[in-house]
Length: 108
Ligand code: FES
Image (tube, rainbow, N blue to C red; front, side, top):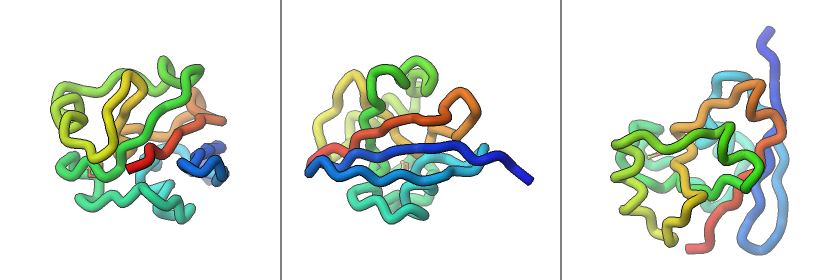
C-alpha cells in the first residue's frame, strides 16, 4: 500500500481544505479529488491550460522546486497574477519531502 501525505489548500476567503494525498499523485489531481474550488485542471495535467495555478507557501517552496522551462512559460498565461511562489500544481508530485505542504489558491 502506498503512503499518503498531507496537503492543505488555503482558499482566497481564508478557508482551508486538508487532504491526504497518495505518494506520486500530482497536486492538481489531489485538489480535484478534495473538491478545492479554483483549481480546475482543464487540460488534465498536460501543461497546457494553467488552470491549476497555486502559490506555494514559503517554507515549502524549496522542496516543491522551481518550475521547469515549459511550466515557466505557461505561468505567464495564468489568470491570477504570477508571483515568485507560483507553480502549476499538476507539475508537483506528492512525495515524503512535501508531506504537510501548504498551497494558496490565488483569487482570480
Ligand atoms: Fe493544465 Fe496544470 S492542469 S497546466
